[in-house]
Length: 114
Length: 113
Image (tube, rainbow over all chains, first blue to last red; front, side, top):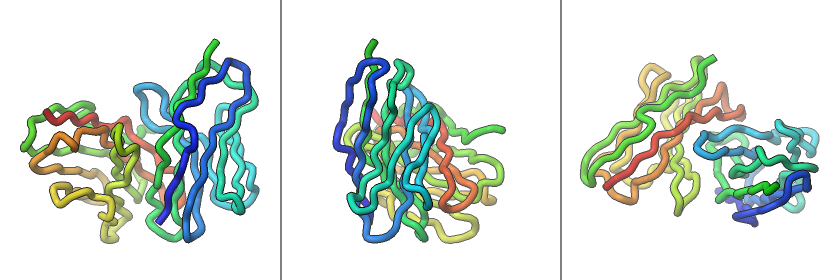
C-alpha cells in the first residue's frame, strides 16, 4: 500500500516570492508521482508527473518538482509565484504495474498575497 | 475535444434515498476512475475500470456503493440508502491507458440531509 504526506496544510506567501510545497511518500513498490492543482470551485488539473528518467520534472505554469528516491520525496517548487497561483495543490502516487489508482495527500492550500 | 463530464453537478437528497451519479469519460479512454473528495478524508479512490477487465472495487467504503460501466464508456456510481457521511464531491477521471495522465471531471457535489 502507498501513502502520501503533505507536510504543510497551508502555505501563505507574497507575490513574486519563491515557494516549495513538500511531499513525502511511502511505498513498498516502484511508483509514479504526480502533482495536481485545484483552483477554487474547479476540478483537478495535472501540473506535472514523474514516470521515469530525469528526476527533475518541469510542468505547467512554471512549476517543477524533483524526485528524490532516497528521501522518498517529490517536492514542488516555483521560483516566483503570482496571485493566480492561489489554489490547493495535491501530491499523488500510483503503483507501477498495478491499477494506477491515485493515492492523494491531504493537500496544501497555497495563498499568494499582494 | 470534450473533457470528462459528470452529471448532475449538484445533488441534494434525503437520508435513506438512493442516488445515481453519471460520468462520461473522454472518448477513447479505456481507464475510468471514481474518487471522493470530502473535508474529513481528502481525496479517496473508490473504484477503477479498465477495458473488459474486472473492476478494482477495493476503495468502495461499503456495500451500499456500487458502480458499473456500460459499453466501455459511460459509468454510473450508485449509492443506496444514503447516509449523511456520504456527503462529498464525487470525482470521475479517465485516462488513455495505465500510467497515463488521469483527466478529471468537474465533480458531483452530493449533500445528504
